[in-house]
Length: 217
Image (cartoon, rainbow, N blue to C red):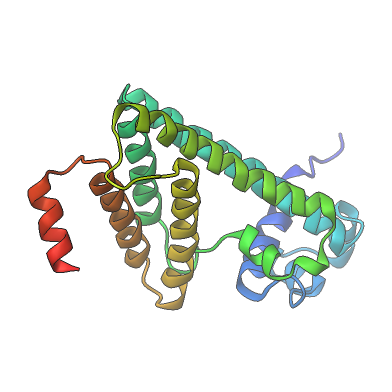
């Protein structure tokens, strides 16, 4: 009976992802990946025709996982509340839980690593990244758009999709700061602060708390 190579393939992808997020794609060699995965060079090329083929498989897997995570978090938020604003706040808050379980070494985003070296990748790879980010934008932005119909924002011309982009930026920035300072608690703090901003914006907290926040700023 032939061996199931799926576990070896996943081990290669896991090792490659860690190497790429730490060093960047260009600086990550096949030798480094096979050493980290504990495999031979022949085994690597049995599963991937080239380093470029690995790059595509890696981002396809990451995009699929990211898409599933966004859906799972929003489904969880929807199970906890029927109000779109509370669902949006829960969606952001659930990222706090994820970050609380993330170590500084694990902090990072493969999309960011690829974007920094955009010239190395083809349109298919760029489209996967764009589509995944757009999925986050539509998921949270759509929920915030529905929230605005029930809960007018305290700032005029509030754009729910810009808020979603800001949320994505906060999450990415939290990864960078967590890794830079070797302190994963920074990631939790930044997400919590952004959630607090949304609560102020939509009037979840009272005017007294808003005045105190303004005075403290």
